[in-house]
Length: 206
Image: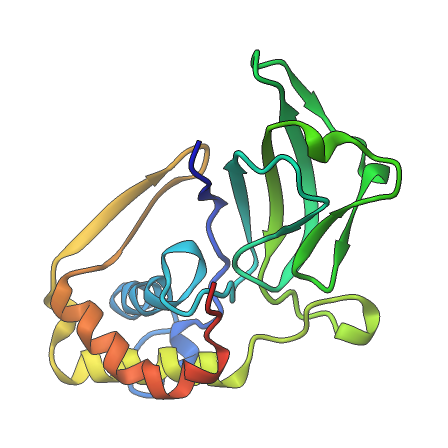
């Protein structure tokens, strides 16, 4: 079984139209769509940065058995929501929280004496992103300023090119509804060009 990472609850927006310079309403749907488009290109499992920015819930599923330490993609990790393991016959069991811990906001580690990590399949659900709580208080801190700057720059660049008219895609998210954002190749290229320099230092290579 190949490892898969999916979004359970989409990221909370890290910018609103109020944060974008220009003359537009605080709830301008065009600006909201462009912010979502720029965010989707950099944030979470589908973003090229390899990092979570807006708080979101992710689920990693795969044949992960045998490792006491499991790297969780899309750092920083806010908290572990649940760990479910299965055996080869498909029997599932939810692991007690005392049997694991989060290390360095990146890795899930089996505690001493725990054996759940020896089961072949794990389904790990966790919250990732920047929660606004200081690192000294066991939070993941504020969204890096360069991420906000990159999204702002991408939105302004798309506005200057009339890119709000690019094709839109609507994606259904189980239990949540749908979200719509610009995802044409042209829009993706615009966003990548506008954001790459600002975000290169935050990129996570896995």
